[in-house]
Length: 144
Image (cartoon, rainbow, N blue to C red; front, side, top):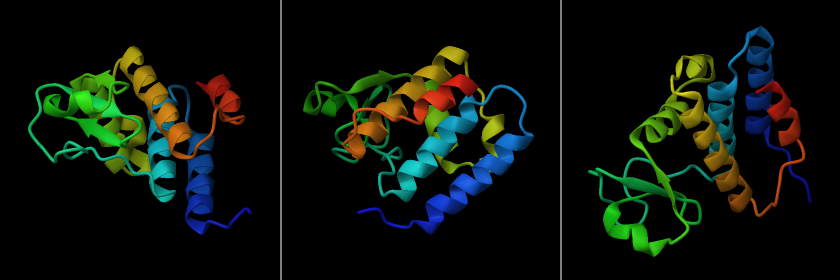
């Protein structure tokens, strides 16, 4: 059964309004939108500490799609399918989660890191909502 979600509606409405005024380079905006979408659905990833043990200081990290956040090196073995992420990808995801929609365009990163962050988030959201694919994602990919 479908349910109304006023927060998601307002997020979409605001995002479409901002997209209407933007020119080029939409990927950082889309990453932020994806994170806010996931958060409003109750799937905000844990980024401030290891999702498994709570460790905050990490030289290396992975993102666990199944556990919903970053893993420290001590916990890598707890998810053999976790994805290696570098500090730049982490920073992109972190800044996108905690930035306003208006500030998402200011998030910098290489095209490769932005693409990897986006792909990681799509995998995470699909896993979280138990879907195989987004039919509407094809539309977004034509914009990017």
